[in-house]
Image 1 (cartoon, rainbow, N blue to C red):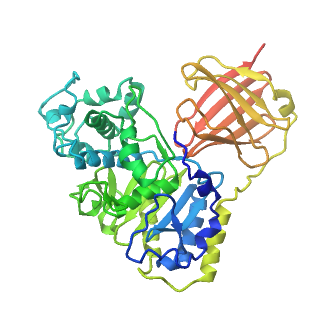
Image 2 (cartoon, one colour):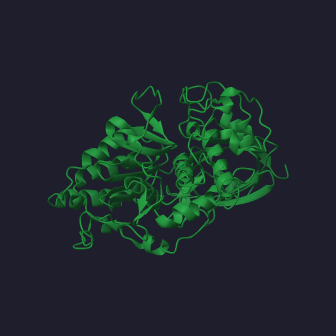
Image 3 (cartoon, one colour):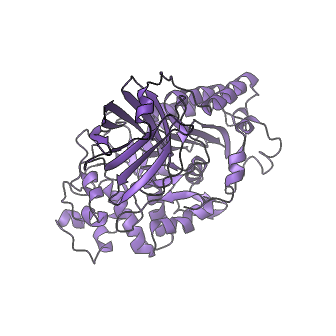
Length: 519
């Protein structure tokens, strides 16, 4: 992880400053000159940039009701709306999930510009001459880099894209060598024949970047992408064999996500330098692959980007609404991070409709106030109801419960619920034993813990709040701030026994029975 020198400055920016008019500063460089946010973003009012504050206020309020973590809208190179939804704050990295794929595609584009990759139709297997690859046939030999980028490689892969069970990615994640696992997959289709969303494709592209550059994709990104854009604060996990993960696991600040979109908005140029091959960033002009999406027959794909040709927009798209949306015709970039699915087409339509004019609009004080209030309200955590505390709380507080071997990996836990510092201590097998301690809010508000430095989500911040459901059952709502993951923990007590249930949102529940130590 690298900590940005401008961190304190960004953290100190007032939300109200988004609504302040900056006479001269926003236009001093000339209306036709790009504004480069390398060191920091300029801010402006929506009306000054031809957008409607009232429409953006409604969008901010919509985010509050749909589990957004952040919302940014950039017009003409200036942030015109920026909201952070408690308990998330904008100075924390946020995992962007599959939007990482768009970053990996951008890096392979840079290898093409730099002459390290000779052509996009280069056969994929050429980059792995030292590997013994299974199931090689004429179809596998024909897979090109472009097929990987377009999700048309033809591998036999089950990821749930068409509603079938998600099987293959989990098998890959359990393997010790993801690259070999993917290369060995049998073929289901000829390359180029069919679009199928496949996490293996970007992981192979990451491995190819390392073969071409002699560096991890993260190190190549630091040199060729992050440093030029002024991105200094990120975390990017690696696969078991040490290669930078290509299908996800990159965490960025929302403002830096907007920089990535802004690079594409400006045709791959930054501060007068062409970072990407000519035409690479002009995604709407690419030869597109139809995704055959049942909800949107026009939805297309190109170079790990989701493309909406009829809406004149394209998007880096990550699980649960980690979105970087670019509107080339409107000179707009919109960023969301979220804990729940974001309706992508509604977001695109709403942002596009808020762009009323290329020129400034008359000031609208009432709408500006509504937007300011919506942003302020989003940043304030709303307490949930808290029930009465039963006598059992004192009886179980400080008692350690131990568990037999289980799929959760939970070895022991202790709840402290009656003192001045309510918290949960627990021990996991990862596979090596590790102990954790997280505070619990008992007043209807989350309490934030320290960043997790080990395990599957290094750097993420746990936030917990608890409430007694009845005289025997205590429940914790947990959020992994910066990842968007929500989990419920339920503790059902019966004498010295404890039934523990873990319920991750959108995933199967798991449970295990334990008993107080010494019984």
